[in-house]
Length: 125
Image (cartoon, rainbow, N blue to C red; front, side, top):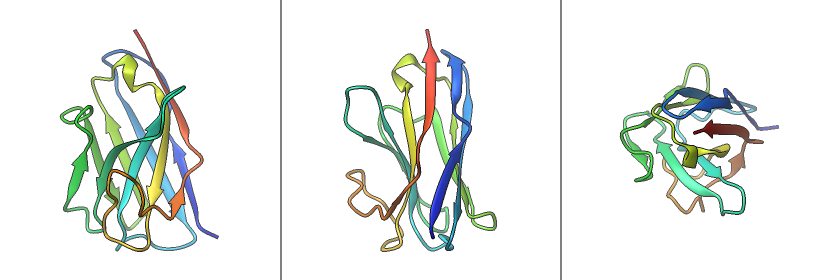
């Protein structure tokens, strides 16, 4: 059974940093695209970042470019999201995503086969 388990969320003041982790189990995702999405209260889930299987290629939502960094450790079957200069508008539940059909996940998320359970990130002003 495939599982994606996120950790690292919490409460932080504006300007602070958090590092999210997503540990995958049940299969290897080293050839698969993985990414992060988020959903704020009352809003639809939105794309945050994606990383290719090799880790060479990345892409970010405009709202987080220059502040967030996605990375992965295929030996640990884990993907990370380093979030710096956090803003109150970054407050959301953050979800890890993975696909087995592609080396990439587009912003619509249509390729996603697996979702994590989510981790809450709250940024206070």
